[in-house]
Image (cartoon, rainbow, N blue to C red; front, side, top):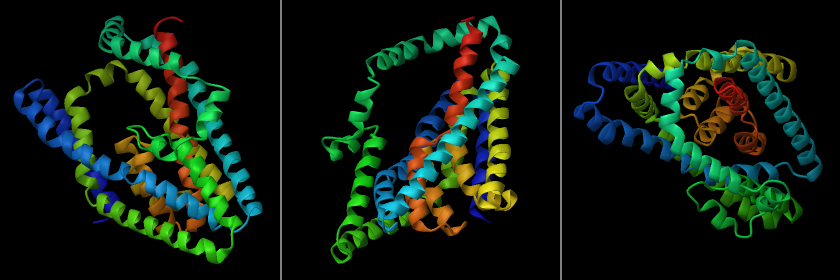
Length: 337
């Protein structure tokens, strides 16, 4: 059985089992024990195995991608096209989300009692996020923070600074293009070794994917069921319609125009990536799978995947652009702002 089929079956099984357990065992000690000692740990182990490979994979693949470009002119051409594409698709995603939320107006459908429940449940978390946002500095300081004083401390955090990591890696890759090839070769071989080992570990982690995905989905659905989903149905529908339009409308069009590739064939080859992204909801956790599938299934050269994909996982999160635009206006509609 193909890997993506196993992951899909795990996703379906976890969702069904979670909904059934929420319906008949909600609040029981047995379900709490299953969540605490089985589904939560298994899901976290799977996620951690993917996430722990992100930093070495980004460093090795991006540095190699830049170094293998050969010269700064080619790097510049690829870089300009990459960032132009990022800007285009992110803008289209945001426009789709804003158009839908203003057309459907999901905030007008939320019952008053649900508004009260959400305020009571998340008031403390909202206050904490507000305080964090007030302390966050933007503007020129944001640019300064991209250049780390200590690159090791910037990634040795619970939440690594990915922009700082990307900056340092780009500098290393560019430096490798500026020195003699013979002198650069030992470091390039080390980076290739790190990249190969990382991919091997990712392939090992993906053997756990059907079970990890089932555990992640079970943990969510067994806790919340469909009650809150029904209450927020118009909001959920708005987001899902937007994501569907972007995924199966915008992308096929761009694949046809720019890559001259059949969209159906493309989606068949990247099924594993889509299922991993859906179940983990993390660009970083999905990045290792994305790189592997791009090289093995789509035949994209390592220097291109190594350069474009790590940047895209940090700077080109279309779903986030669409989702956050919908969320902000949804909340404004809910509270009459």
